[in-house]
Length: 373
Ligand code: NPG
Image (tube, rainbow, N blue to C red; front, side, top):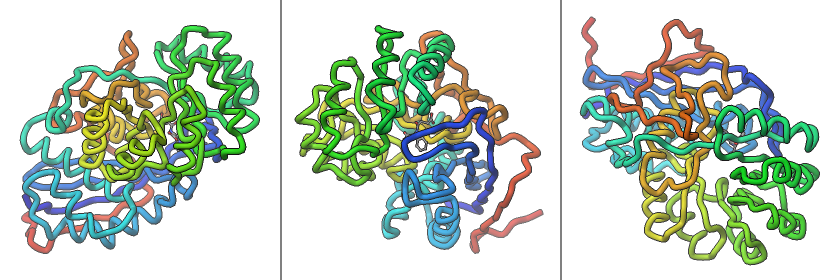
C-alpha cells in the first residue's frame, strides 16, 4: 500500500475540571490528530504529547516538527504491506515515540479499515469489553479526595487510581481506604519520590493497594529494583519503559511486577504488542495507561486493551471524563461492569466530527500520487 497523503491537525481542548498530578495542574489539552489517506480510506491517530516537557521530553511542538520533517516524508515514500512495517520504517529515527505512535497507529487504523476488520481484531484482541478504571488527580485535602472518589464509585468505576506526591500521600490514601474498604485502589507518583522516601512508601503497604506506579525517576530501573525488594505492594512502571527491551530489563532486574503500556510512550501498537507478549510470557500483568485522549486515542487504547494479557483495568474512562465536547465520536460510555465495549466496525470505529475549528493544520502529499479532482 502507498500512503497518498497525511494530514496533521491541532486543536486545544478545555478539561471539564482541572487535573493535578505531581508535576502540575492541567487545565487544557493541546491535541494533534493525524489522518493518513490511501485507497479511499482514512486512518486516524492522536499524538499524546503535552504542551510542555513534563511527563516526557516530547511536546506538541517537537512532535509536529519530527512528524513533518522526518516521519511523514518516510511514510510517503514507503510501500507498506503490513502494519508492522511502519515501526521498522521509523526505527532509524531515535526517540520521539509519541510522534512515531501518532502516525503508526493511524496506519494500523487505515489498514484495518481497508481490510474491513476492526482494529481490535487486526491486533489480535480477544475481549469484547475491556475493564477500566478512573484516574483521580491530587485534591486539596483527604476529605475532598474521599468525596471525589465517592462520585467516581457512584458513576460505576470499579477501580480507582489516586495521584500522589510528597505531602499528599499516606494520609490521603488512608482516608480513601477507610471510607471505601473494599474498593480496588492503586496509586501513581509520576516519579515524585526518591529512595530517601522508602519509609513513606512502605507505610502504604498496609493499605491493600493493587500497585504503586512509577515512584522513582522517569528513566530509572535500578533504584526501582532496590525499592521493590523493600515493598510488598507491586511496583508498576510507566515512564521508565520506552521499549520491549526496557520491559525485559525491568522484569529481569525485578524493578517492577506490573507494566503500564501506553502506546504513545512506546511508539505505537507494534511495540505495545511486543511488550504485551513479553509480559504475557513472563506472567507479568499489563494494563493500558491513558493520556487524557480524545475519542480517537481512546478508541485505539480500547482496541489495544482487548488483547489477552491486559488483565488489569486500564486508565480508559468513559469519554465524558475529561471533555464536555469531544472532537470525534461515537463516544464510549461505561457499562455496568466497569468496562468499555470494544468497537466491532472497521478500524477504530470512531470518526472526526465535522466543522471543528482547528488551530492549525497541514497536508503532505506523496510525489507518486496524482490527485484527480
Ligand atoms: O485517564 O487518560 C487518563 C489519564 C490517566 O493519570 C493518567 N495519566 O501518568 O499515567 C499518567 C497520567 C498523566 C496525567 C500523565 C497527566 C500526564 C499528564
